[in-house]
Amino acid sequence: MVNPFEGISMKGTLQRITLAAAAVAALLGTAPTLAAGAHGEHAGHAMPMASAPIGAPGEAARVTRTIDIDMTDAMRFTPAQVQVKAGETVRFNVRNSGKIRHEMVLGSDADLQAHYAMMMQDPGMRHEEPNAVSLDAGKHGQIIWKFDRAGSVSFGCLEPGHYAAGMKGAVSVQ
Ligand SMILES: [Cu+2]
Image (cartoon, rainbow, N blue to C red; front, side, top):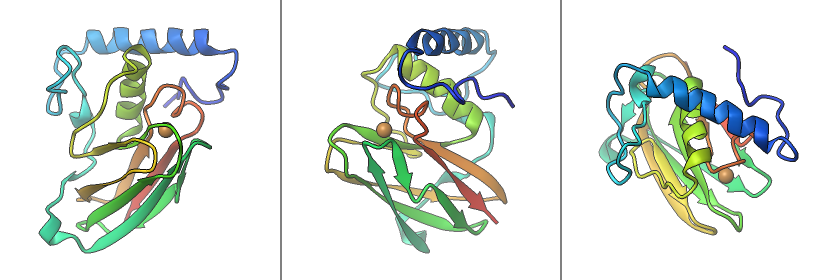
């Protein structure tokens, strides 16, 4: 599918990003149903995480692997590509090494792009869902996630400007 943010540089294209965000938001506004994952603390801002299967929140007692993920102000995740096995419950130990807030949100590309468009309009949002961790500078956090089927699950930082700058990655589930 077409990624409306691909190739858009951070400088000088904010208007284009805003237009793209508005377009996506308009599309979402007409979506018939937004299932699980609504932001409790943000009335009227539903997070359509159920549109593609990406797995489910995991239980700490079932974690079989821990993967360290570093986030930096260079707008990158390290590593950005991760491989897991279908059925595995993974603990992502996430660290923000930067001086500004970053977050790691698991989702399909479509979900991440749609939600990023909302973040552009409501930059103060923080994500507290099981598929996300939002971290201030220097903080650690974790996501425990069960990957239930083979395929690719994306992740990204949806802080305004970050996702468009390439702060994204993918989990290859095999
Ligand atoms: Cu970020």
